[in-house]
Structures are given as structure tokens and as C-alpha cells.
Image (cartoon, rainbow, N blue to C red; front, side, top):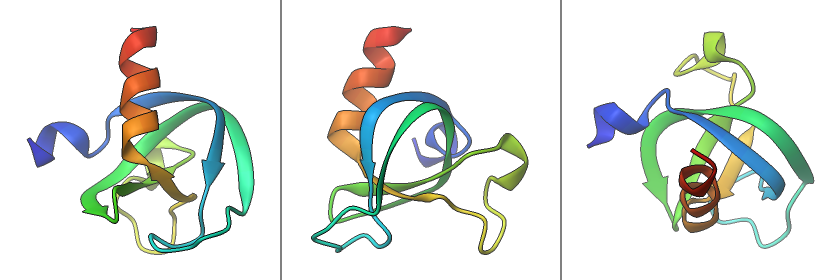
Length: 78
């Protein structure tokens, strides 16, 4: 399962981005196409990046998003 999630292209709409997996406050709201940075899920959040070239590369992630919202919205758009 983890290999299928890492690098997956997702579409976000009005999604809150958090700087860390346990942040209480979001840092921004994004729309558009993003990629899942890696397979790590912590506190029901997953890391994303804004370019396919950045997947898994150190210090290149955009932030953390709630997994339930990401997968629900992305899979309903496919």
C-alpha cells in the first residue's frame, strides 16, 4: 500500500496545510495539483509536495494535510 501512495498525484481544493504533523494551526490554504511526498502518516496527516520532481527529496515538502480530506476529495474527482 505504501508504495502506491508515495508519489500519487492528488487534487486539493481549499485544503489547509500544516507545517508539522501535530500543528494545531494551519499555515496556508491551497488549491491545485500536488503529490504525496512519502508514505509516512502521522496524526492522520500526510506530507505533500508541489512538484513531481520533489517527491521524497529532503527539505522539499510543502507541508502536511489531513489524510481523510485529501483522499476523499481526490478520489471523488477521478
